[in-house]
Image (cartoon, rainbow, N blue to C red; front, side, top):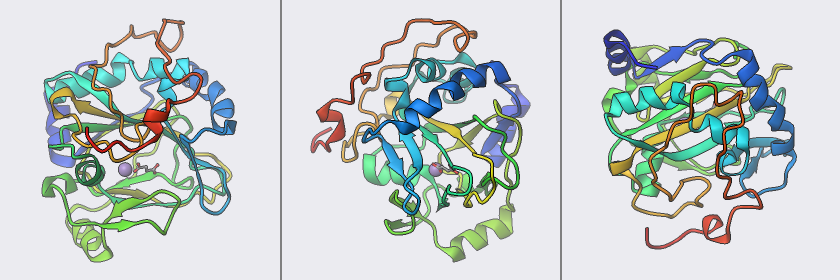
Length: 280
Ligand code: SIN
Ligand code: MN
């Protein structure tokens, strides 16, 4: 999939692009069929909600599940990112956020590159976030919110919030968010399962809790330009990947056919990936 000049201009201006129904219901069905087993497994890669204990985020699923490993190599997702960076990309982070019906908790206001820079020593914001909806996203189930144009400000000062949810995050204060919203407004792309968003790693974003009876399961993939790989391995390797091999795309029908993929964490992530390492 090639982006048009108009789309590249929109990305530069607003910091995101939205592709409703990019993947079919049949393709999404292949992924959703795996989720019960993934969320019910007791792996360290599964981070649970603070209050209910249901899965909040499943990291590194593409390293042990074949359907998600194929998604991680899907040309409809990878090619536009390579086009924007004009370089090969590797998978910096892969996660499925569950935002479960009734129990899915908030994601505070933040920029992803702030964390990648501070914790992982990623040099530049040359990494793209991709969100792929596994459920319909509507106004009730905790849609992801963006402040359009906020990527233009680069890395904004943030505080490390280790208390609000089960997942530590570098978050922006209320005054900063109010100032940015006064300038750029707010958007929350909504649409059917199979929709995709590309968003800049400095774009300020957040989501509210999910009080609705509908799950809002979303895959988030962070693709980094190979030359911009992280320099520090402070966080576990399932949160910040330590292999910088360029992604080799599979054919466009890869969610519907069993193309072979390597699954190195099939029997569990190795000890080295679970632990911090001092030297990258
Ligand atoms: C994220 O910012 O990493 C996740 C946000 C969400 O799932 O709503
Ligand atoms: Mn984020």
